[in-house]
Image (cartoon, rainbow, N blue to C red; front, side, top):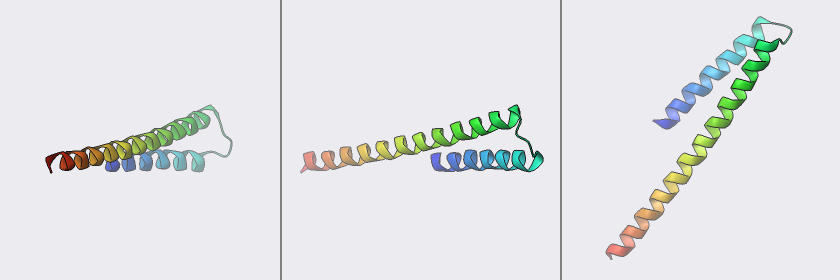
Length: 71
């Protein structure tokens, strides 16, 4: 479910960026701000992906330790 949310955010950011680039030839303050927002959103998505991956790895290790302790 988290990956779906990240995909939706990335898609919206891409749409905003595309609309901004097609509407103006010169980059103004709004366009620069939009790019900064896009970059921040992308970096946030990357950090979330890493956190989810690390959490999954820790859960797997915990499950393995639990299996070993039951033996």
